[in-house]
Length: 135
Length: 424
Image (tube, rainbow over all chains, first blue to last red; front, side, top):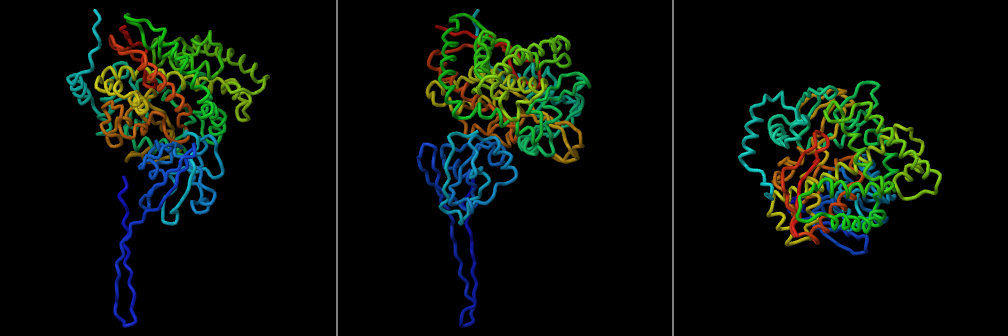
């Protein structure tokens, strides 16, 4: 299980008076991700930044993502279709991912393995659709 | 007397641990078929995972010789996912047959990229969701017919009357193979997987090849019928029309047939038997299942982990490399012992217990991982799920009446007999 990641940011600046002022900000970043099931059902979950998209689903019991290999890019049971509005931000498939996507049925241009996408702040609001079934 | 089989005792386990502890480490050979007949190989793995997880093993069987036994879950995952270093092209079993001995068929499971991917993609659609949905009703109907026809109040062989019958029906359906001849399929599967060098009861090599030629002729006839007809959804038609497979030579055709027959036969068949035996030996799990039949869903992957019907897959190193602190040389062969990884406490909690409602039951090695992962995994799960749903609807109890007879093979971990009795 992933513990929530707590980002400790220390911001230092020189004030006009020349005194050193420090401000400590604690923030727990929890990007949101939206899963659209094959039957149309929508589940939205918030997870700590740094969590993989696969874990975001399995830790929250989102049906339709199995993650049999535990995130090793080795089973193709976390196949998702990334909403076209997000594909630029989720980046390119990894080499192992290309290999494993050969196993899935209904391969599309926006097919990805959820274990190869890490949820960061920039992906807050990411929307993905699930295939009819996993390999 | 109608005495039921007593579940295995702890004192037996202690005696086995003492026996294994007394073997010099260098002499431990998990590929000894006798350990599989006696179902004691688990004690060898227990020691290897602890003391020598990547173990140089020697087999007295000619052709098997020296190989590495990879026994821990994570090391197996590493080998299985590094197909660029660990090749499948020299075969998936430890046996290396003499030159000119045509025991090795060209099958896509024993190919590397890119040819593997092309041929595999041709058969992928048969187990795609739409096809599985089509078969759901047919599998349920055939399962019901087989179960309704079982004798009551008399001891019979579960392997023959249920496990073989159901998996054979399924294969005949996949191939659109004449139903009246369906028993040829498990026969050919047995012929293809047993060899004189490892099994003294196997056919003589010439007889074996003659039988396999008959199989080829039979399937060639079906191929010719289908290649000249419009494409259909059965496997032979898919192979005959598929761009990557329609020009296969006879050996390649036979290899891929043998792969699909063995893959769909020796595996699910033994999970069907192994599941029944596991529930018999763990009555508290059977009680859980009866109280909550929805647990079939998580029980099915647990049965597949527990049985691990294919005990290992072989790989061959394409370059010098290191694994678990051992130097692997180019050309060395390795056995990824899925059976051992599936009992590795570092990856699976309480691995020596059969628990039908465990957390993450699907995280097991039985289907392999990486590009060679089992193509028919979902179909296998569907068959097992339907079998248990239909059993629960019909029978209040299935009694195991004696010890199972286990197959003499370190590759196929299975049963040739299991005497049972259904009261009522």
